[in-house]
Length: 170
Image 1 (cartoon, helix red, strand yellow):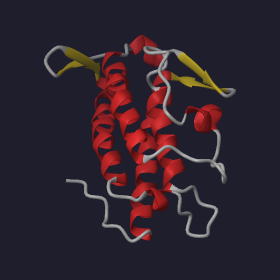
Image 2 (spheres, helix red, strand yellow):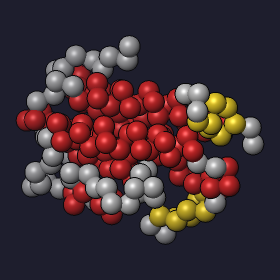
Image 3 (cartoon, helix red, strand yellow):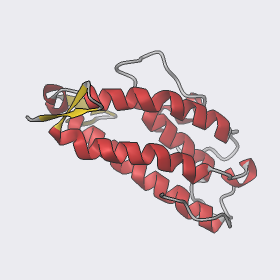
Protein backbone atom coordinates (compact mmCIF):
# COMPACT_ATOMS: atom_id res chain seq x y z
CA UNK A 1 0.00 0.00 0.00
CA UNK A 2 1.24 3.48 -0.79
CA UNK A 3 2.05 5.90 2.03
CA UNK A 4 2.27 9.69 2.05
CA UNK A 5 4.27 12.04 4.26
CA UNK A 6 2.30 13.82 6.99
CA UNK A 7 3.90 16.69 8.93
CA UNK A 8 7.31 15.95 7.37
CA UNK A 9 8.38 13.09 9.66
CA UNK A 10 5.35 10.78 9.68
CA UNK A 11 3.86 8.63 6.98
CA UNK A 12 0.25 7.55 6.84
CA UNK A 13 -1.27 4.68 4.93
CA UNK A 14 -3.04 5.92 1.82
CA UNK A 15 -6.18 4.16 3.09
CA UNK A 16 -6.08 6.30 6.22
CA UNK A 17 -5.60 9.73 4.60
CA UNK A 18 -9.30 10.57 4.30
CA UNK A 19 -10.05 9.26 7.77
CA UNK A 20 -7.21 11.34 9.19
CA UNK A 21 -8.64 14.46 7.53
CA UNK A 22 -12.05 13.75 9.11
CA UNK A 23 -10.42 13.02 12.47
CA UNK A 24 -8.65 16.40 12.39
CA UNK A 25 -11.83 18.27 11.43
CA UNK A 26 -13.83 16.54 14.13
CA UNK A 27 -11.18 17.33 16.73
CA UNK A 28 -11.99 21.02 16.21
CA UNK A 29 -15.74 20.66 15.55
CA UNK A 30 -16.31 18.83 18.84
CA UNK A 31 -14.94 21.72 20.88
CA UNK A 32 -17.10 24.16 18.97
CA UNK A 33 -20.17 21.95 19.42
CA UNK A 34 -20.15 22.30 23.21
CA UNK A 35 -18.69 25.80 23.38
CA UNK A 36 -20.84 28.09 25.53
CA UNK A 37 -23.40 25.43 26.51
CA UNK A 38 -24.39 25.75 30.16
CA UNK A 39 -24.02 22.72 32.43
CA UNK A 40 -27.79 22.81 32.98
CA UNK A 41 -28.47 22.68 29.25
CA UNK A 42 -25.93 19.87 28.81
CA UNK A 43 -28.39 17.71 30.80
CA UNK A 44 -31.60 19.05 29.24
CA UNK A 45 -33.49 16.34 27.33
CA UNK A 46 -36.39 18.66 26.41
CA UNK A 47 -38.86 16.20 27.94
CA UNK A 48 -37.79 13.43 25.53
CA UNK A 49 -35.96 10.12 25.87
CA UNK A 50 -33.15 11.44 23.64
CA UNK A 51 -29.57 11.32 24.87
CA UNK A 52 -28.68 14.71 26.33
CA UNK A 53 -25.57 16.63 25.37
CA UNK A 54 -23.66 15.53 28.49
CA UNK A 55 -24.10 11.87 27.56
CA UNK A 56 -23.33 12.44 23.87
CA UNK A 57 -20.21 14.38 24.81
CA UNK A 58 -19.02 11.68 27.19
CA UNK A 59 -19.70 8.94 24.65
CA UNK A 60 -17.61 10.83 22.11
CA UNK A 61 -14.75 11.37 24.57
CA UNK A 62 -14.93 7.68 25.52
CA UNK A 63 -14.60 6.77 21.86
CA UNK A 64 -11.47 8.92 21.49
CA UNK A 65 -10.12 7.41 24.68
CA UNK A 66 -10.78 3.95 23.32
CA UNK A 67 -8.59 4.74 20.29
CA UNK A 68 -5.64 5.17 22.70
CA UNK A 69 -5.99 1.95 24.68
CA UNK A 70 -3.46 -0.15 22.78
CA UNK A 71 -0.67 2.41 22.90
CA UNK A 72 -1.50 3.97 26.30
CA UNK A 73 -3.35 1.32 28.35
CA UNK A 74 -3.33 3.24 31.65
CA UNK A 75 -5.36 6.25 30.48
CA UNK A 76 -8.99 6.74 31.51
CA UNK A 77 -11.50 9.48 30.89
CA UNK A 78 -13.04 11.36 33.81
CA UNK A 79 -16.43 9.71 33.18
CA UNK A 80 -15.04 6.21 32.65
CA UNK A 81 -17.54 4.49 34.97
CA UNK A 82 -20.47 6.15 33.18
CA UNK A 83 -19.36 5.01 29.71
CA UNK A 84 -17.34 1.81 29.97
CA UNK A 85 -18.81 -1.31 28.42
CA UNK A 86 -21.01 0.86 26.15
CA UNK A 87 -23.34 1.99 28.93
CA UNK A 88 -26.33 4.00 27.82
CA UNK A 89 -27.62 7.18 29.40
CA UNK A 90 -28.30 6.98 33.13
CA UNK A 91 -31.09 9.23 34.31
CA UNK A 92 -29.80 9.97 37.81
CA UNK A 93 -26.08 10.15 37.01
CA UNK A 94 -23.92 13.23 37.41
CA UNK A 95 -21.88 13.54 34.24
CA UNK A 96 -18.52 15.33 33.99
CA UNK A 97 -18.41 19.04 33.23
CA UNK A 98 -17.56 20.48 29.83
CA UNK A 99 -14.16 21.50 31.19
CA UNK A 100 -13.45 17.91 32.27
CA UNK A 101 -14.56 16.54 28.91
CA UNK A 102 -12.42 19.06 27.04
CA UNK A 103 -9.37 18.26 29.18
CA UNK A 104 -9.78 14.55 28.40
CA UNK A 105 -10.37 15.32 24.69
CA UNK A 106 -7.17 17.34 24.56
CA UNK A 107 -5.29 14.47 26.24
CA UNK A 108 -6.64 11.68 24.04
CA UNK A 109 -6.79 13.36 20.63
CA UNK A 110 -3.05 13.68 19.91
CA UNK A 111 -2.46 10.10 21.07
CA UNK A 112 -5.30 8.78 18.91
CA UNK A 113 -4.04 10.81 15.96
CA UNK A 114 -0.57 9.36 16.35
CA UNK A 115 -2.08 5.86 16.35
CA UNK A 116 -3.92 6.63 13.08
CA UNK A 117 -0.80 8.08 11.46
CA UNK A 118 1.45 5.19 12.43
CA UNK A 119 -0.85 2.18 12.06
CA UNK A 120 0.49 -0.29 9.51
CA UNK A 121 -1.45 -1.85 6.67
CA UNK A 122 -0.87 -5.22 8.31
CA UNK A 123 -2.52 -3.99 11.52
CA UNK A 124 -5.38 -2.40 9.54
CA UNK A 125 -6.08 -5.78 7.95
CA UNK A 126 -5.89 -7.73 11.22
CA UNK A 127 -8.97 -8.82 13.11
CA UNK A 128 -10.42 -6.95 16.03
CA UNK A 129 -13.15 -8.25 18.34
CA UNK A 130 -15.47 -6.08 20.37
CA UNK A 131 -18.57 -7.23 22.21
CA UNK A 132 -18.90 -10.38 20.13
CA UNK A 133 -18.47 -8.51 16.84
CA UNK A 134 -15.50 -9.27 14.63
CA UNK A 135 -14.11 -6.78 12.12
CA UNK A 136 -10.77 -5.52 10.89
CA UNK A 137 -9.02 -2.61 12.54
CA UNK A 138 -9.65 -0.60 9.37
CA UNK A 139 -13.39 -1.24 9.63
CA UNK A 140 -13.38 -0.39 13.33
CA UNK A 141 -11.49 2.88 12.81
CA UNK A 142 -13.77 3.79 9.89
CA UNK A 143 -16.85 3.19 12.03
CA UNK A 144 -15.35 5.17 14.91
CA UNK A 145 -14.71 8.18 12.66
CA UNK A 146 -18.23 7.89 11.21
CA UNK A 147 -19.75 7.74 14.71
CA UNK A 148 -17.79 10.82 15.77
CA UNK A 149 -19.35 12.78 12.91
CA UNK A 150 -22.78 11.49 13.86
CA UNK A 151 -22.42 12.53 17.49
CA UNK A 152 -21.07 15.97 16.54
CA UNK A 153 -24.10 16.38 14.28
CA UNK A 154 -26.39 15.50 17.18
CA UNK A 155 -24.60 18.03 19.39
CA UNK A 156 -25.03 20.65 16.66
CA UNK A 157 -28.76 19.91 16.53
CA UNK A 158 -29.05 20.14 20.33
CA UNK A 159 -27.36 23.56 20.18
CA UNK A 160 -30.16 24.86 17.97
CA UNK A 161 -32.94 23.07 19.88
CA UNK A 162 -31.71 24.66 23.11
CA UNK A 163 -31.58 28.14 21.57
CA UNK A 164 -27.82 28.48 21.03
CA UNK A 165 -26.11 29.74 17.89
CA UNK A 166 -25.46 27.17 15.18
CA UNK A 167 -22.20 25.25 15.20
CA UNK A 168 -19.51 27.20 13.35
CA UNK A 169 -17.43 25.14 10.92
CA UNK A 170 -14.97 27.86 9.88
